Length: 222
Image (cartoon, rainbow, N blue to C red; front, top):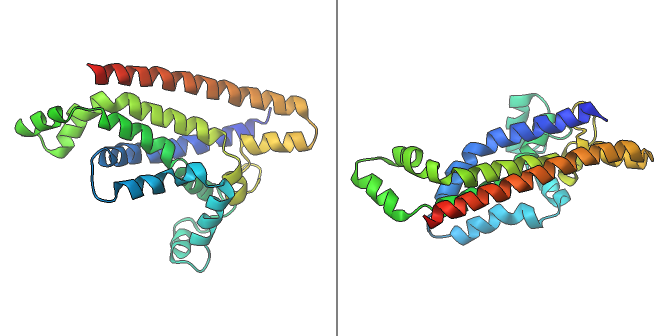
């Protein structure tokens, strides 16, 4: 068992979830309301689901290249280019997981009755108070589902990790990359052990997501 690679995967998943949690709440709430161009915004958010991870990784590398404004800013913040670094891996993971973080939260906020928001406004609540005291208590199963899916999906990321981070031990070599390396070295037992751990996590995540979705459905029905 490659504990270093597994620990790095959990660290990457943890950072990705921590960054995307507020994004999930704010973007999910905003996307739940109708506005001009919402269809285009939804399509852009869903792009990581249909784009090959290598394509997304390529565009990230170009956008953060040495001669780009974002690249200059990135080196000023982190002292090194995004490629082959853990910070760059986190950025790629955040972008890659946007659909998993936003869409379930959006569906959860869409299920909150508009009458409750109107009643909160009539009671003098501002947008922040309405979000905290009315919407979040009803939408939390969808937000929790989004974070569970984001965590599990991050653990299994391969293409974009290899494209942006490579396979540097202790820096960018995640569990998925370690499994690939074990197979390439014909260490099937080692690959099987690590695969079993990721399989168990994925199965538990799916079961939790289904349970939360049913809870959200019952809440919307009430």
